[in-house]
Image (cartoon, rainbow, N blue to C red; front, side):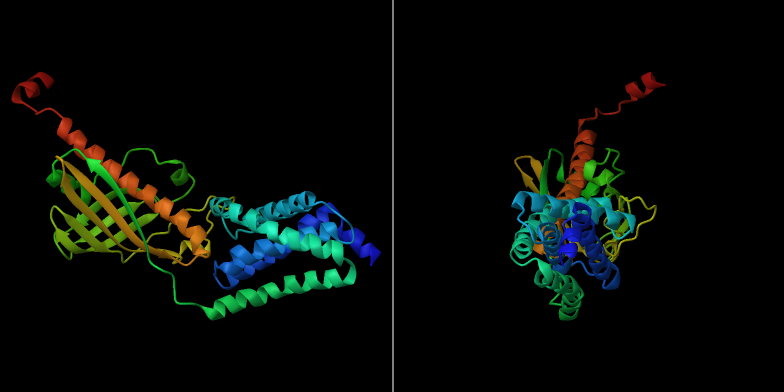
Length: 332
């Protein structure tokens, strides 16, 4: 038993062994069940933190800071393994990291307590049971299902100094956005490029072209120049994963974040136009209280890219001087 404790107390073992357990749990959840739920994002960081700190503290007194450092290193190694084995991309791992490191605090506290107080066969048995119970937790969450993801609403607005009719024309079909995408878009998040429309009025089909494909949007309300509402019947992937693998196709890119419908509202205020864009969407990634804040912010930035482009386009057209015949002759 003393030899087992000496083996577990090795820093490399305390870091690598829990990371390998975490890799197996990630593969089961992501590839086996295509599930991004509580067990993956809450249970797994606690488990990895517990196993790492337990191994590091098994049969001896260690500081909490030292145990937590080992737990964090194990989680970082797990992230590297997830990249290597193409289970997910770098951007999603970076977004999940703050939550994982926070939850590792609880796993570290429990693992340090078990390792210091129990150690030996009893502590090793508990650690093994926890590791082996994770597949049952994933399976239970999958079988339990749930009522389905809630629909979230994000609204963004800008003031446009242009006639409402011109703003309306740009809303229904805006020209290509030439402004360079922001950092989050350069890292792989899908961003809007242009929009076109086939037809006019209710039943027309709007196509909003993104960097990963096109949203197909049948018009459900056409109240020119006040309101344009539409359903979304086709969603492109929400992002292109930043990965060491050329074509990483993680399951969360398909059907885990879905736009349901959208709307533009225009109203005149003190000679300007208040332009509001709203998206109703859902995502099946838990915990929603964490991932919802991130996805809301991403959609808000997508809105701003479109609304600011419409603002610049319509205000720019208004500021151009009339094209007189005299100017035409001078330009020849």
